[in-house]
Length: 388
Image (cartoon, helix red, strand yellow):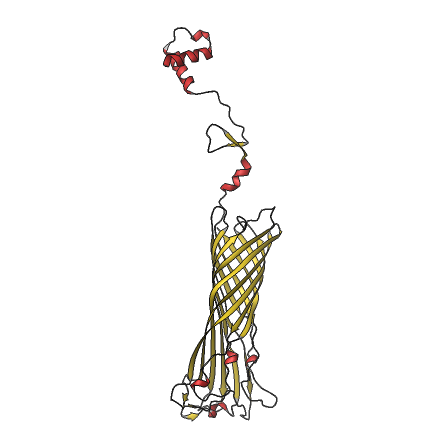
């Protein structure tokens, strides 16, 4: 076999080596036989096919390089919120006095601040699937309003014909008062865990040839709307002090939601973003109503001697729909800034204004919850998102 290889090599390099071979010529012939057929280096504009060592794929270098790019998978952001909410029609907290009558609506909703946080991750080679967690909340929504009467002629609503306070009838504190003030402090909290599916790959990096992108989402949502109303009545007698009536109503809505995310790149670095969501869920409602002195001592029901504080619960189905509309500026591939407006409508809930009694005669007069009202929470937000 060796002589066959030597003979073949000699036939290639010329007849002068076909005679008696030397050790050097034999080594040279073996080396040339092992090197295989003559090869031609590929053009620099082609890359080797990884599945075929003997051929080269006809793919330009620039086309395949994007597939190897390390796209960010994690995303997180934070925004500041300034929001308010709509309120139901007010309930009177005093009998008319010279054309003046205070109501719960006089404790209006203001525009306090809040925070919005989210964290998520994309999965898969094309990054079409993601899981995201969201929290946002607004606190201390509400204001105060008051009236005074030098003659001590303010009669509160509710009266409490079935309650004694410090051994005295509650009417001692609730009629002929010199001052009255109504205070509101509401809270809104939202928690979401969503699965997101994009119709196209890498939705956070829209190519030039596709200016729009659509994503679907589905997940779990918890939404809280809490109202607290406090009516302060001043007797004008420092030895007696004041008497407060408190109503705290809380809606805890939880269930499945569906929604979408729409992106439209209106400019090379600017996107219009719209996120509608809808849910129907169970609502665990609580309400606590109490008649208590400013020193923290509760009144007493004359019927059974129990403290003048009643806690009630109710379970109903409620619905929620929300829309976020924002403009995002993609500063870099890793950072974006945005600002927008959020509107959340919530239906079939209970609110503190609707739990206001006219007379407290027994524990049953404070028990029970009236649901069926609605509210709209809305306001602006601005913040940033980072991708890594």
